[in-house]
Amino acid sequence: MTKPLRFAVFGAGFWARYQLGAWRELPGAECVAIYNRTRAKAEALARELGIAGVFDNAEQLIDAVKPDFIDIITDVDTHPAFTRLAAARGVPVICQKPMAPSLAQAEAMVGACRAAGVPMFVHENFRWQTPIRNLKRLLDEGHIGKPHRAHINMVSGFPVFKNQPFLADLKQFVMTDVGSHVFDIARFLFGEAETVYCQTRRTLDFIQGENVATVLMKMGPNAAIVIVNMGYAQNPLERECFPETLIHIEGALGALELYPDFRIHMTTRAGTLINQYPPPRYAWADPDYDVVHASGVPCNANILAALRGEGVAETTGEDNLKTVRLIFAAYDSAAQDAVVKL
Image 1 (cartoon, rainbow, N blue to C red):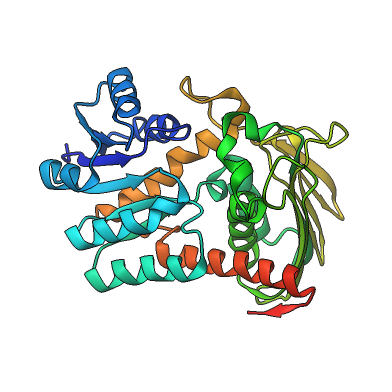
Image 2: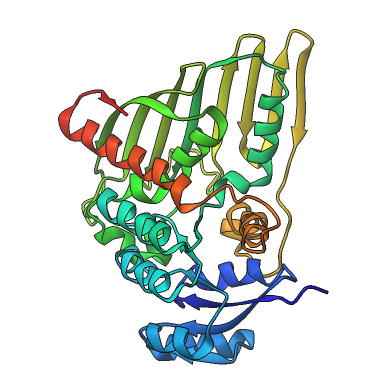
C-alpha cells in the first residue's frame, strides 16, 4: 500500500472539523498536526480526532513536523502570509476560499508558489457536489444543445451569521463568500466570462458588507448569458433550500433544471426526464450543510491525486485566480454601475 501523505491543518475553527472529516474518508492522507493561534482550540480538536501534534506557531509546526502539505482553513486575512510561509519552506499548500482579501494578494500568493515551484490548490468544493457534477455531465453530453442562457441561484434565509459571526464584519461579504462558489460553478459549466455587470445591496443593519447581489455575465465559447443571484437576506419568504445551488440552463434543444432536493429535470422534445442525485451521507457532516460537506471528499481526492502525481487537479491556485478576478470585476462593476470587460 502506498504510504499516506502526512499533512498539517492551519486553523481549528468552524470549517476545520468538516475538512478533516473529508480527509479522513481518504486512505492516502493523514493529519499529523494542527496549528491555531489560540492553542486551546487546536488542543480540543486534536484531542477529539486523535491528532498528535498541536502548535500555536505556524513556523515551528512546519520545521518540526515537515508535513508533505498544509491545508489552510483560517480567516481569509491570514491566507497570504501562510501561503508565503509554505512556499518559502517548499511545502505544497491547499487554501480555503476565498483565496485572499484582494486580487493583488491572490496574484501574489499564486506568484510566490509559482516562483518556488510549490503546488498550490484551492479547496473549491461546490463544483464537486453530486448534483452539479451530474448537471455538468448532462450538459456535456449535448442533450439540450448549445446553452444560450442560464440562471444560477444561491439565495437563502438561513441564519449564516449565527455559526459564522465573523461574516458580519466583512466589508465585502456575499460575493467573496457565496460568489467564490457560484462564480466557480459558472466557470465550470460555461467557461470564462467575457463581460460582467453587477448590482449589490445591503439589507441587514448589523452587517458591514453587501448580502444581496445579482450579476449578469457573457461567458464561454457560446457567449451564453449567465445570471447569478446570491443572497443571505434572512427573508422568511425566500425559498429555503440552504445550502443547495439551484440552476436553470436553456439550450438550443431543451433545458436542464437543478431543483431543490437534488432533482434534475431534463426537458427535450422527447419530454421531461426527472432524476434525483443526492450527495453521500457522512456521520461527521452537519445536516444543515450536508451537500457542501460531502463535496469535500471528492474535492480532496482530486487534490490528493495531483499531489501524488497521479492526476491533474481542477482547483489549482492558477485556476482559482480566474474566479477571484471575476469576483473583483463584479465589485468594480457595482461601484461604477457599468459593464466591465475581462
